[in-house]
Amino acid sequence: MRKTQLNWGFLGAAKIGRALAPAIAASKYARAYAVASRSLDKAETYARENGFERSYGSYQALLKDPNVDVIYNPLPNHLHCEWTVRALEAGKHVLCEKPMALNVAECRRMIAAAKRNRRLLMEAFMYRLHPQTLRLQDLIQNGAIGEVRVIRAGFGFSLNESAKNVRLAKRMGGGCLMDVGCYCVNAMRTFFREEPEQVVGQAKRGKISGVDMTFGGVLMFPQGRLGVFSSSFETVLDWGVEIVGTLGHISVPSPWKPDGRLASFVLEANGKRKTVQIKNGGGIYHCEVDHFSRCILEGKPLALPPEEGLKNMRVIEALYSSARRGRVVRVKA
Image (cartoon, rainbow, N blue to C red):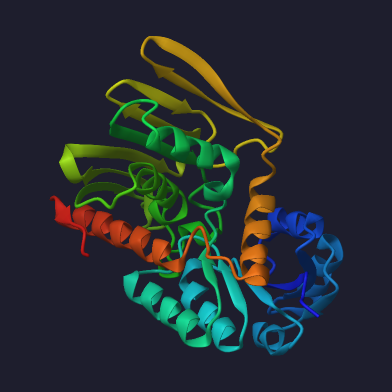
């Protein structure tokens, strides 16, 4: 009998998992099966509070459970590669939080493990699967604002640098570019439908943490098109995307977390302005869980294959290199 529902297991009791767990509970394709933590007590508490059936006191114990079909990996960035590869080698499909890894080399190792074990691996850029993003791509592709020439993206919020937080831990892959700037890079690549050739990056590092607390940059795409972004741990909540073309522009006030019931953005072209609404598009995590689960169950190709994560990391590496060297850096192919 063909399987119709997958058992999901969580590596760690991360806060972000509390957003994904309700989506799993609401999905007819997924089941909140088990959670693992380095502390069994913590795992049991997390499981009880988030509707999981089983709990484990180690990550390896979770991977050994033959009933687990899918692993969600929201561990700190420096553990993405190690535990994703272990999960794939254990025969599990993996949804890995963004950024996919610390560097391009780790991304390649993860992709190789997925292919070797014939398992699906996807980076968790949940906004990409929401109908709002799909509608934006469709409008751009069909010339609603002419040829896209400039994209501006931002993602920032305030974070106390003195607080204990993995985002501020240098050895764990912390920093605002890795945490939220990666969204901006991803969006510009997505809407241009091409890879940048060169980048310029500028970082302002924290005196306490040593990580980039604010990072901005310019991505130079073919035919002289530009992507400009800012990311920060030092601002009020700041997010948005502007897509500017030869005939008009699109302003997206909530690109990263569009509302599940009524998302909207503004399109101005040929002297006319209108608000485009997406009604009942669903929660971003629901879209993510359903898509990944259905691809596994139905043998469909991923909308976000793991090579997407590698391409995003190539740009991030180039941006860090540019910030260190103080000059334009070419993105490696």
